[in-house]
Image 1 (cartoon, rainbow, N blue to C red):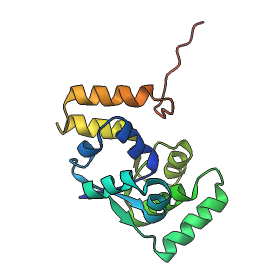
Image 2: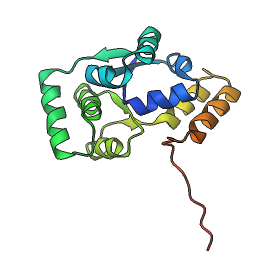
Image 3: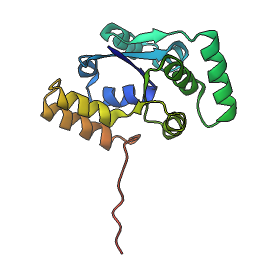
Amino acid sequence: MAVLVSDTSVLIDLERGALLEDLFRLPFEFAVPDLLFVRELAGDLGDRLTALGLRVEELSPAELTRATTVRRQRAHLSTPDTFAFAIAESRQWTLLTGDGGLRELATSVGLQMHGVLWIFDQLADGNHCELSRLHTGLTAISTHPRCRLPTTEVRRD
C-alpha cells in the first residue's frame, strides 16, 4: 500500500468538502510530519484524522537536515511544508499538496506529487464515493473564500 504524505491544504479542503471519511477508504495510507500535525492539525480535527487512520511521522536526523536546508533555500515555504517534502523525498512517498511553491519544489526534484483534484479522481474511479457527494464536496471547496483550486480565466478579446 502506497503512503501519501499530505500538507495541511489537501486535508483542509477535503474537510470543507465533507469527504475526509471517504479519503481513508482509498487504498493508500496517509501521513503527515509530526511538526505539521502539532502546529496545524492538533485538536478536534487532528483527533478525527488519527481516528480515521492518519499516520503522524517523526523525521529522521537526515530528513530534518534536508528540511532545514530546503527551508533556508526557499524561505517562502513554511517549516511544516519542508518537513512534508523531506519525508516524501527521503522515503520515496508521494506528496499531496495544494501549495504552489511546494508543488514547484517537488517537480524540480522529480518527486511524485498530486493535489486534491487527484483525490477526487481516485474517489470517482474506484467508486469509493457517490458522484453526487463528490459534486457537492467540490462545490463546497470551490466556493470557499480560501479556495486553492486551479482556475481558468475567460478572456474577452
